[in-house]
Image (tube, rainbow, N blue to C red; front, top):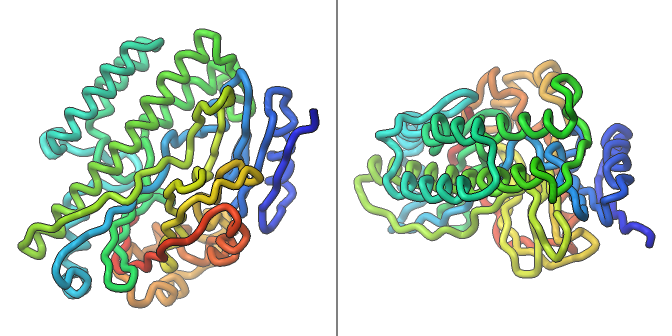
Length: 379
């Protein structure tokens, strides 16, 4: 039976295409799709969706297990005007509440009790399944302090607006925990400590495969919990600045780096948003152009998926060489953001045109709201 392969990438650079071909050529892959925002990764390109049978590939999930998005509707009387008026104070208050950047962690006493209780449930559930005792000990010793922290790179916290509505959007994952888990099982799958960032599958019925699936589930749930904890902290910070209680509504909390079991297959998404019919999702553009709240149309030719963002058009190194700080500042006029030489590689010019990306996948997702930024934080 011929494989069903779909390619929606908008720039088709050769290295990204080569990686995609190499992935879908594996015998255990039955269908594959490449999203419009795709670009070069390692093993699988960013934006790849790979439908596999009987095997799980740690490198196709990637280092940031559970990376994804959360959107929260913030409700309050004249809330937009109040946020705009107090944007500088809110910006600084959130910086105090949420550790941001690689290697940063939270003091245990500052983590909310409800998050601590949920974390204990996750850990108990993980211990009941197949696990590596060294991994278990690592989770017990380091996991809690990473909850409610942002991380670096393309991760962000953003307060934005749609018409008269105020919204909180966060992009983050499983922090250093996910990286350690991924590296451990990528090395085990490859039997190499030097050449492990490639396609090395694990039989789902093998001991290693069972262990990885168990820790993968933990990582995915942990990432969801991390974003929730950050949302509590941001809302709390706004309440302190404004001196009033706010009502909130969770619109969606969704992973876009995962492998999930569906109808006999493991659907690997490496930077792709699930988009079944009626399924909610978030697709961020960049620091200037905000994010799109979308609902899936259930298009099988997209493997029920969409992009996870705009996708990089320039490597981090090239962005820092070719984009000036002045250009970055000018592009962010009117937005209170983390604008510095450190975040130059995250400037809007380093990304593809999000409007072109959204147009390319209009048969996969329907835009509900376009959230424009007021305040943006990066680590």
